Image 1: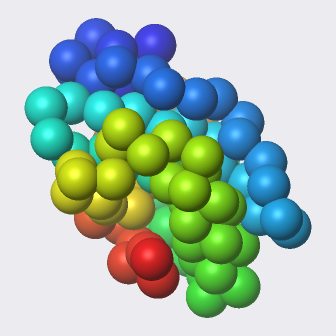
Image 2: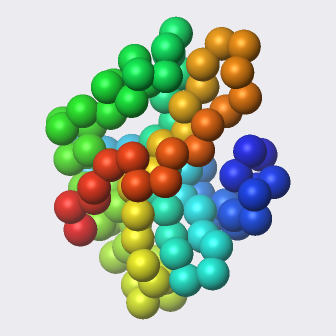
Length: 101
């Protein structure tokens, strides 16, 4: 809902494929974002949880998603995060990690 309120069209939720998972795939204009949602006690804890192996699994699932959704292949792509921290509004972090597409 948080991304929808900011103009993003949700394409998929909880997309799982080939050993990887993407929490949210969304599009606005010619940009498709692959979003990892992390809930932790602190903002820094949430960001640190998106480590190398996690990014590799997200990237693998993103490649699989792109192969199945060819209509979006001409778009630009980005790895974003939505951080959930107690007593704060969700935070959308554009470009939180680099995808290996």
